[in-house]
Image (cartoon, rainbow, N blue to C red; front, side, top):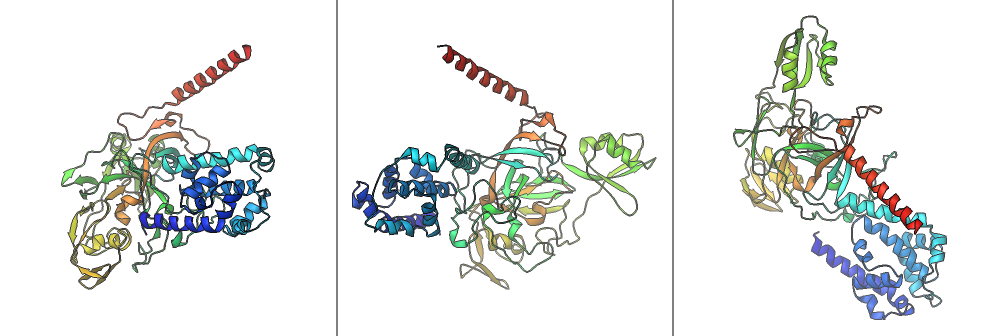
Length: 512
């Protein structure tokens, strides 16, 4: 179902609502009966009847926000017809509007107008303020900026565990919510309960749509996205291709670096990234980390770990220690007098692992030696055969919005046999900077553009554990070049100026 179909259904529903709920009530409120039968316009008249500003009609049609606004409109519409108890609003919601239809045909129903004093008595000013604060916050959270916390070390040194981010929705274009019946400002579950925060019925799902952004995803951007493989059960342990439904916007949020964009040919050679056969230059803030095997004279590996503040390390049965380092720190460790040797080990191609994309023995790649792999680009056509199918089968099955089937070397799209396919959207390759300790695209494959959430722009707070704030990371930017700079003092300075100015103006008015 596309937005044209949804608009048509909305007009039909609006017409039915006008006929069943409003026609006689409009007359009692001093309006014309025909106004109740004009789709969309009848909502505007309802807003005029309850004496609210015209722009409320815009809020009605914003997914998630509209749910809150409609409840407020129902309450105030009942109020002007003298049904002022909160239970009448509850009856209306539980009966899906049938209660208002009953009032529409009830002869005793009379229009009495708005009484702000009684509204304030029933609904306190605090409740009113909180309600509209939720509406405003939901608008900002959904279409402009949202907070995000770094839970894992996959982007260590660029982004640390305990960083609190602001993620811009408008850089790449804000995605319209696909689950309109949902609690505002929570993701897929209600905090502390584990229960779903949205209705999971597929019929209550909106089609994908995105407000145009002002930039495209660039190579090496850090990107927040919904984890594509969140609903795929075939990975790692099950090769059955089972699929569990979950709306795109309710899949788990991930943050990785986009190492290849649509149209690139991506490859990893001994841990180094190559795009179209050329070594990819990383941004100066990107510090890729790898595991190094360390041998020391004293065997006191704890001293090395403490000295260089190493957070990730492991020891095998031979008591060899592997520590996770970026290349700059690796040079410092190697020059330590107690270190005998420091060697970096990579997993070579040639040994098939079911964990590694594309999970097919025809492509025995590893996390350190991978590809070459073409990243699908919208409008580009590929041949469908036994060579390409392991790479793009999952994409055709789950991300392109088509019905795909195969029978041996025969391929069917929407019931029609085909030999090639043209991609409908762009795809990206998302990986962590912590190259040998990151659950990323090397395990699940491509990330479609319709899964993209936004771009991290600011670290507004950062803690190493619960009690240790990293003050130098407060109010630092994400994605720029050069050493990160904290703007915390500038923020406090702006607050002092603001409060100083408002205090000065307040005293001046008091003296006048």
